Length: 242
Length: 151
Image (cartoon, rainbow over all chains, first blue to last red):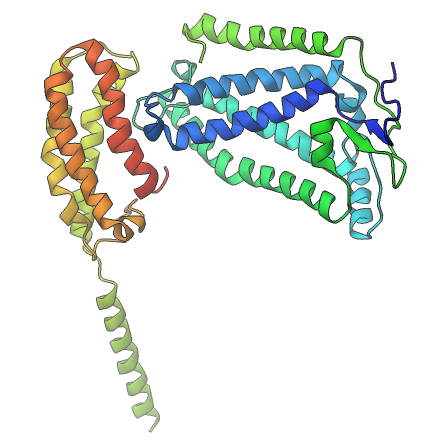
């Protein structure tokens, strides 16, 4: 079903569930950082909010994986699986000042998106096995690995966030801001409105996004399944949800 | 002539090395001493930490021992972070300590008084489960975040 009928010269690029996912993930990552960094000031000594945040992020990311197979065409992974050569060619066109436009992710941005999803997944999963260095809080699965492994998980939970995930997010934000300022491509606005302008050049990947029937109901069902798949096993083995 | 130049170079180099080592000489004993006290805090907090995680049953004596260790060690720490004990000895202390000396030293006063107050309140498991994480979070974790190299 084609749902991108031109409206004021724009085309549907991102469906509502994908946009909700994106901004909810942003909010949860910011909240996870604040709730750890300022735990004492917030009175959350056992890092309850931080831990719940982490599990919510895992639920959300699992949902995104499912949506990568069952969502609107631009959100499906198959639509933005590009070869390294395609990414390099796209990068060369950027440097050369050519404007190549994509309704979904461009070949270079696609790699950043996959990297961000992988990094956020790794970060949140490590948190399940992490123990706060003064033993006052722990992820729900810390008992299932050795003390050495919890120390390693805790160490990498910190290193990955500050030295890999944050720089990757900074790169992602900077690139999107530059697209708006330099190339006049309102990518951030598109992630809010779900639409991209048809002008000044045609999209290379698709002219319209194919949306599955009842996308919101489908997304809600997948979110329920995702929550069950994440929270069920965690609760079953640890007696805690987060 | 060549010998005089060589001698001058040797003497000048020696003087420079001596001067440099004097200006950067660090009180390694102080660093070792404070590390011992802080390691002692960690050791004393290990059992209550296990109790807080639910890995060990509540033991009032071990909790009290930790609180007493905090009270005994805290007043000894500020002088051990002197201006000549910033580096060396594999210290994990950050330079922020010496940039915020008043705040840093006040934290040890706060730790000692919080530990003293807790002696009277952490007497049963229920009070302990609430109060221990608060004590450690507000006094240990919050200090480590600002003043200690991340592990």
